[in-house]
Length: 296
Image (spheres, rainbow, N blue to C red):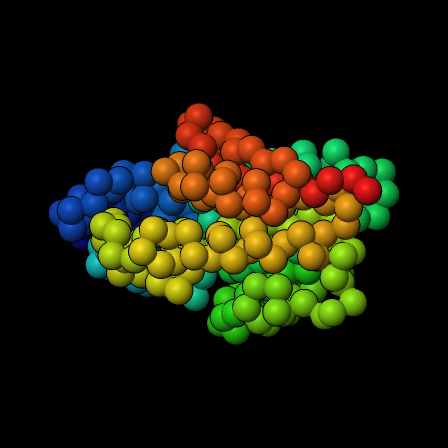
C-alpha cells in the first residue's frame, strides 16, 4: 500500500495491508494475525487496537511492521514473531528455543493448583518441581498464583533454561521463589530434595516419533521437547516411575499427556501410586494425569 502524497500512512491502512499480505502467503488466520502484529507495533493490546488505528505510523514503526509481516508470511509462528505470548496471568517471552505455551497446558496448571491446595498449599509453605520447564510457564504460574510455594524448574536444554530465567526475572518478587536448574528430569535436582516434594508437575515430550505434525510445529518448535519414543510415552513412563521417591507421603504428580495415552498411563501410574486418574482439558478431552502417594 502506498503512503499518502505527504508520505504518511495510518495504522488502519497498514492493518489492511498486513491482512492482504498474510492471506496471499496462505495464512488461514490472516486477519487475526494482522491485528496482533499491528497491536504489537503500536504497543497496545488487541482490545485497544481499534481506537489507535487512525494514528500515523512512524518510520521505525513501519520498519518493525514490515519485519513482522515478512516473518509471519514465511510461516514462522505468530508467538515467535511477536516474541511473547500470554499464559494464564503471565506474558511470557517465547522463541524457537522453547515450545509455545498452549491452552491445554493452562488447564494442566489448574489441575496442579487444585492438587496443591488439597495438600494445604494455600495455607502452608509447599515445594513444587516442574520437570522440563521450557519457557517456565507452569513453574511461574504456580509461583505467582500460590505465594507460599517454592518451585524448582528443571530442563535438560540450556537454551530453554535461558528463556525460563528471563521469564523468572520478568515476574518480579515471585521469581525469588523459583530456581531453574539444568539436567535430565529428576537428575537435575539436589539429593536433599528427595522425599520432600509436595507436587511434581510436568508437560514432557509426548508426541510419537514420526507423527504427522502441523508444519508450523514441525518446522519451528524444538523437536527434543516433542518426540518421546514410538508411542510418545517414554518420558511419561520414566517420570511416573521415579516420582514417588521424590514426593512426600500423600504427595501428587500431575503430567500433561495426549488423550490417546490416557489408558496406558493410568495403568503405569497405578503400578507406582495408590490412586490415579486422568482429568479433562477445557474441550473435555483427557489431558492431565494425576497420581497420588498414600498417606503414611
